[in-house]
Amino acid sequence: MVSTGQFLATALQTFCSAAVTSLVIFFVLCGFRALVRRDWIAAIVAAALLTLQQGALTDSTTFGMDIALYVFIFAVFAFILLRMGLVPAIAGIVFINMASRIATAPDFLNWINGPAITQLLLLIGIALFGFWRSQVKPQAELT
Image (cartoon, rainbow, N blue to C red; front, side):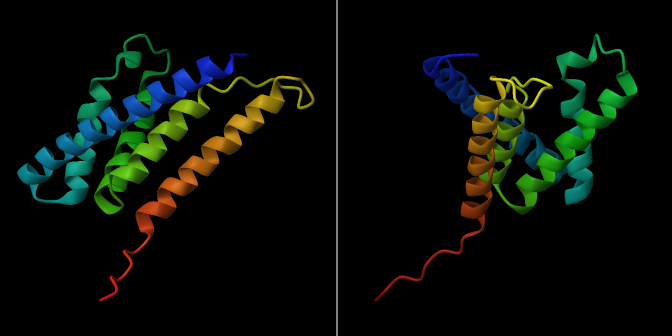
């Protein structure tokens, strides 16, 4: 269990790395989109390239499954960037990275599960807010 300051520091670090990761995926995707002229081909090629740069694959015991998982995750984020924009992609990356850091116990009534459920609800709220704000239509100006 971490203190509030450590949790906030980790959350801010995750937000910053999610923004950088989304921008990298966006720029790689734009480059491949200019080369191949099709959105879905560009998303798959970008996902394959971004999968190859993952350091966790070098010492994986389930290499094939990990490659398929990374290609799928990066392809989903590429399609989110293409169809919905940068804000939902950042929200998705923050959700995945923060959810992987939540400590839980197998026993539901264990003391550690209370803060874990609170963190998970906070993450779900942030993700829903990000997707909701990206879909809101601009309001008409009053003249």
